[in-house]
Length: 147
Image (cartoon, rainbow, N blue to C red; front, side, top):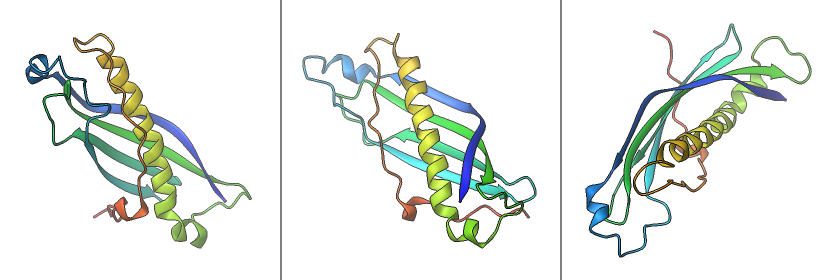
C-alpha cells in the first residue's frame, strides 16, 4: 500500500475581499457557507516518488449575504512510500493514482480552509468557515505530463 507524506505546502496566491454588498444585507443572516469551486492540476515525479499538486479554491455565485469574495491557491508536495518497501512506482500505484491524488487534494483543501479562517478572523465580518467538501474521482483530471 502506498502511503503519503506531506512534505511542504505554500500559498502562491491569496485573495480575500470583504464585500460592500454584504453591509446592506446585514439585517439578513449570512449564508452558512458560500459556494466555491475547486480546480486542480498535478504531476508525478517518478524518480523522486513525489506528487506535486496545485489546487485553487474560488468563490462563485456570490449573493449579498456572502461577506467575502476569495480565491486561494495552494501548492503541495507529497512523497510516496510503500508499506512493503517497494522502491519504484508500480502497477498498484498507477491503478490507484487518482485515489491517491484525491487524498492529497483533500489535505490541501483543509489547509485552505484553515488559511481562510485565519485571514478572515480579524476582517470586518468575522471569520469565514468553509464546509468540508468531497472531491470525487471524476473531479481529478489527468496528470500533467512533462514535455
